[in-house]
Image (cartoon, rainbow over all chains, first blue to last red; front, side):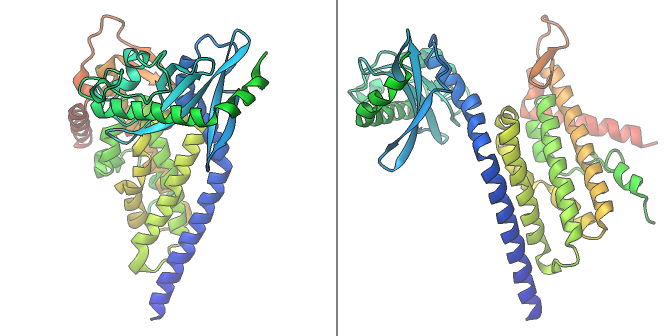
Length: 197
Length: 201
């Protein structure tokens, strides 16, 4: 009996100690990790969407609460006027969540560009969503007022051959962004005024 | 037959070098050695975990009841692996992206558990640290070598700190087999064979 108590005690103390240590390290590295992710995962997509912008879209970001979720928006300034925002959302892909950064022009409610940030799709098939510029280019100029769909589902986006699930995931992520955008548009316009130069 | 501290350290470098002599921990050895950089990064992460877990296991060896020792070892190892994962995300994000899933898998790497069970739970703290460090460095060197061979023939480059260096010049035809999974097996087998030849005298 004493041995049993000792086993339980040692394991409990060990687990509690390890939990405490990890929580402390996590707290201290959280901000740093977020910055690294911005730079290496979201950074390339954001910079590609806002090509030619006169500001640094990664530095010019703000957060808005949408219902209970807090979302990060990135601002693109063109010709001294802040008129576009980018937002990330996720769609269910073949190998997990597909992250998509979508840039939207507030003046005419169209997409100015999209870029896949994170994914676990099959190389050579679904992974083309990220590597094939032709696929992403199809989203340019698409209106966000209608749900965005692949051609099989009656939409305008041609799916990547052999990767319909991935293509659908990208479209659903884009539609999700459009929904958030429509909900928050008045607040976004208000926020963007601060970035006009 | 007690070994000196230096011998305890040095045995990990040749005599008992983990992937070749002990043939332990082959999963990361085969999976991440596509480039030198990945191999060395993985090796260093494993070294850190090995040294820390060896130290702690050895410190706690009198307290840990023998019936639940494996569970205790796993808690200790898993904690340090998570520490490595967080630190790598914070300070070496590009490397973390490449090593991905293999960092959490250090938990089930047989070398780490093997050293805790076979060495640290029976020896003092200083000797355990020396053993962990030796094993870790041996593992890093092995991964580095395997990575170098595979990358050199499979890609014609050697990568250090994000900058691939072209070795064979532009006319080189990459031997793509080497960077695929079967190439890793063949390469590991050949290196094992060479090591046995060298040590068989």
